[in-house]
Length: 155
Image (tube, rainbow, N blue to C red):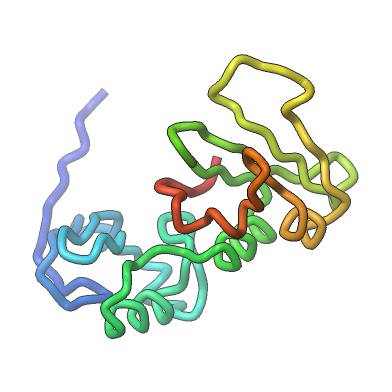
């Protein structure tokens, strides 16, 4: 197998405009060390849309950066991503939780998956709205502890 030769070039970050190195062929997939945004060709073409690399839109990331806020999805951004991707995860207190579509295509299955398997820990909700209103970790609604989530993305 022949190794792929990457040729890097410097561009401006799509969010904070700091210099960032990206692959010249794809012009994407490098993280800005200033703001944390992952440079993608899709966000440049569709700044109002999310991508697998970035769970919130480029437009929203730019707005958050201008306001001096962290560039991270809020709970509604995460749910929007789930609605379109269907299999997402997040980490809270070093435990990863999976959120996937139920087999009926409407419901939501929620469980911690890097702990000892236990069927009692898996919860199914009737809809994404039911998940948003009722999903809890240690008795606290997920939406209320979202600021404590430190990792999130596709499964």
